Amino acid sequence: MREILEYCIGGIRQNVSAGSLVVQEGGRTGHLYVLIEGRLEVIKGDTVVAAITEPGAVLGEMSVLLDQPHTATVRTAADSVIYEINDAASFLRQQPGVALLIARMLAQRLNAANTYLADIKRQYAGHGTHLAMVGDLLQSMINQSPTQVSPGSDRKSDPRM
Image 1: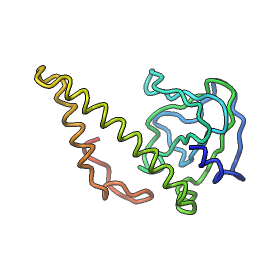
Image 2: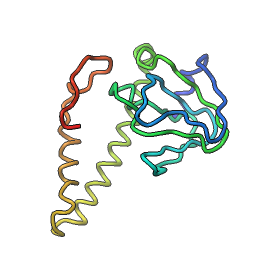
Image 3: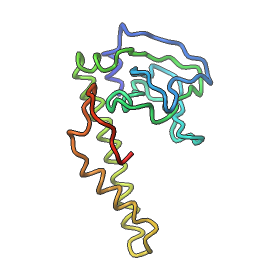
Image 4: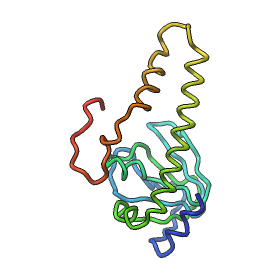
């Protein structure tokens, strides 16, 4: 993801102290954040679910693309330097190369999640119904209609959420 850094030159560069919140779960900023250097933690609820150290890692993209609140908190685990892109939707429209890089990153994440869930489904086939939701989740991930998500639209809330 280092390629994204080339698009961010001239953006707002911020030094962020260890322990600072970059993104708050449930909040809305409309911003993208790109890690230049340092270490970040992604926290879902009370659980640290990932550590981010790769320069060019993007944060806040799901909130921007889905026009929904942030799905996790991001906190600095060490002093870090980030780019902050204030009007992320406009930035992505003006920089289709960044949008494509983010799309590839999201596709990689989706592929990893699908692969993992399919493996769980295979391993536990025939072991009762307590993991039946895995099949339902895979089905819903594959059958999402692309018209449901339109960044910047006035679409109605998804009744399934």
